[in-house]
Amino acid sequence: MLAFHIATFTADVTPPEGHPLCGGWIEPVRGVDDPLKALGLVLLGQGKPIVLCVFDWVALRNDAHLAVRKALADAAHTTIEHVTVHAVHPHNAPFADTVAQKLLDEAKGPPSLDLKFFDRVVKDVAKACRDSLAKTKKFTHIGVGSATIKEVASNRRVIGEDGKVRFTRTSATKDPVARAAPEGLIDPILKTLSFWDGDTLLAALHYYASHPMSYYGDGRVSADFCGLARQKLQDENPKVFQAYFTGCAGNVTAGKYNDGAKENRVILRDRMYGGMTESLKSTKKTLVEGWDWRVEAVKLPPRKEASFGEVESRKALEDEKAAKAKRGNAAYQLAWLKRQDRPIDIGCLDFGGKVFLLHLPGEAFIEYQLAAQKMRPAETVFVASYGDDGCGYIPTPAGYLQGGYEPTVALAGPESEAILLKAMAKLLKAKLPE
Image (cartoon, rainbow, N blue to C red):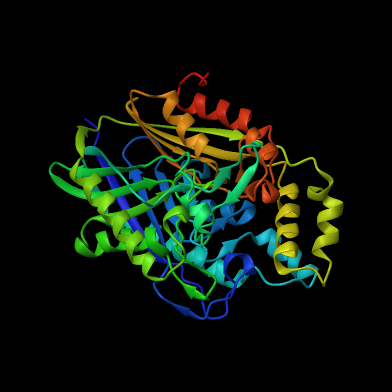
């Protein structure tokens, strides 16, 4: 009988004073309310080691995402195809795209990422992973639990009678009319995958789909309410490793239930914490007999509009009078165009055809998460988005036509849906939903 082991690691990835936050579009670091972490787990015992890692950052894009995967693969003695890296997506946090930052440097644009800080983080995270292999723990079972989260997630896009976006509910929405609109399409279920040695709980990975911000833009670094909920659970039992992955939350925020008042951060934290606790209590364990790790490489086509092309993007980047966000977005667009010869890897961890962990890129709309679950309705499908974020938002084709904020900064075109769904179905060994 095979023996299975896990190693867990944690590294501090908190940016220093003055470092840009959210790509440099908001106030830089003025202080730290709570530290940011990179959290990871290594699975050993069948084939090459598998690394699952998540950062309390806004996003890791293109070559920055690749650099972390390469470093973790080397640290865990595995291949890059066996490493998946995600971001939780709080906004008072770094946004990493090394190519975009080099483009900004060349154009004497506003800073987005301190490259020396990023290099140090990559080394620190890799070291934490490498060191964890000296203290692996045997695991015999996995557990699956779930809980319904109430009054956290709401669809960001409120559609009017004309079929267009009437309101965009940002993470903090003050407009009472927008907040009074129906909750909209979400996935209200938080799921937890846990690892056990007999009756001893070793680690828990929580998955939920919502932008994880209560408020931001004040220069105060924070993992915000999802990270704080995870940490509260971690502090209660330091021996059990806790990690949190954000699902397909490209069009989901807490805007219906949050007007940006600072006291709401604690309220939202406690709702998430309550869900995590309930999910763990509902856990049903199964004996682990092995797993399968599958990867599909996809190329998501870039936008075809002139405003997203190289000429217009270069013009915006070099415009010294343009807003920081516009120049930053232009650099991200150019970085995305530069990496078109390298596809995005999508990974799926399959425990016996009953439990699946699907790892998606970008800020995918909630429709993709719900589609994945429909592909395997009798099984449990965990979905993490915010992997390689080079493509930015991934709306549905209908989403582009409806308008709203997300399509204005999505870098991949509407054709991406068919490509992504096909890859998801192949990874899940399922048919495409009708």
